[in-house]
Amino acid sequence: MQVDTLLTGGTVVTMDPQRRMIDAGAVAVAAGKIVAIGTALEIGAQVQAAEVIDCADKIIIPGLIDVHAHAGHGLIKSIGMHGGDRWEDICGEVYTQASPPEFWYAEARLAALERLRFGVTTGVSLLGGGDTIMRTDDPAYAAAHCRGVVEVGTRSMVAVGPTRAPHPRPYADWETGEQRHYEVSFEQQMQTSREIVQAWHDTHEGRIQIAMLYPVLRDEHEEEMPPADYATACEQAQLVRAYARERGLVFTQDGHWRGSIRRAEKLGLLGAETLLSHCIDLHEDEIHLVAASDTKIAHNPSANASIMGRCPAIELMAAGATVALGSDATAPDRSGDMLRHMQQAMHYHRTHFRDASVLAIGKALEMCTIAAARALGLDSRIGSVEVGKQADLTVVDLRRAHLFPPNMPVHRLVCFANGNDVDTVLVGGEVVLRDGQATRVDEAAILEDARVQAAQMIARIGGQGDLELPSDFWG
Image (cartoon, rainbow, N blue to C red; front, side, top):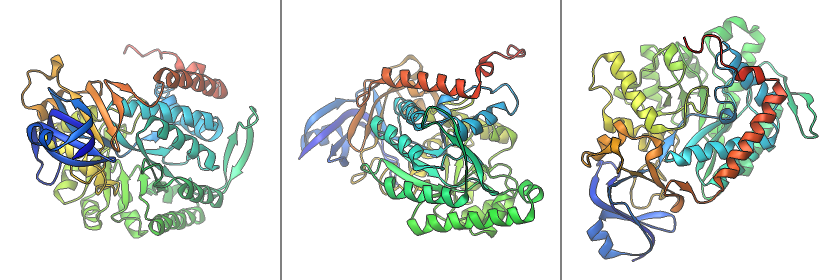
């Protein structure tokens, strides 16, 4: 059999239903899909490959998946993080007032490059924040993000949608180089989202997916919003959810906690295509609502929300719910390194239960591979190394001091590896990272563009003071 690529000699961790692991294994790829898996000896005898990648002393896993992060954060990162709510205020100002399409293009390429270098082949990216700062006043911003991701070669599920009522909301653009202010209605944001779906959903060989988002409605919103505005917000959430169902899209919400899932259930927002992030301090009945409705959970153990409260990921999975890991990256103090977040998740729940056996090592890996693919409705395409699936593969070099001696490779991977150990990445059968370097793009040009766009953004918001060390930086 003639194939395009043969990865041979490494430990293959399939994440298939049997969780097979193959020592000295091989994976054959043709026309973007996996066509054979087995030992290097048997597969080598069956195929002739245009390219052979030597994976000796390496581990071959499904491409890692990040089920919750934010577009835009990559150019803000830690700016203003020491100023109380200043970091969130910066995000709100930048994403609605100070970010031309060039900003979103530069940030998308930088974030996609970060993911690629860390072996993350698929990631969710909310187009801004999940609350009142979505950049959905015009399709140009999502288009700029999608173009950037496609150039790098990874996959992105871009979440778009309206801000929470009341409307209109103030926005600004920089088309002429000068700031132009205007107001945006719910109807305009919905129309923008529809246009984004029409133009980009499931395009570029499946590298771009679109999801719909409406902000979470919590107790404080019902208490603080005028009754008419709260009723409008409930109606809007249902309209967005209905559109997602109509188009077969994932519906996501960012920031559930302490009773908000009860409200989502009453509004009809739960279901197999719903992905809810953070989900801290859930009540017992909410855990059962999630499991019974097959609603998916994005657990972000490194996020600030997981400091403010605890996501009961262990209890959710015990109840039968699908829980996957998100980075909430890349700001104000987090990265897109999903290996780091696996380790954080294990320590997070083990500390809570005071039990070092909680959250098994293999389960942590599952939460970034096949469970994550299931959470995004993509498990028939990606998430495991199985014949017929898209060849999204990450190869990690185990020939490192912190990963030696060469035994117990999955333990070494999950407990000790970090994203910088990633050697080779394939997306849809294409080698997009080779020997730790991107193959499609000029990495130096991406970094330079990010530097220029970040400097312009800081100037627009007068944010130079937000770069200074605070007086209590050293404690």
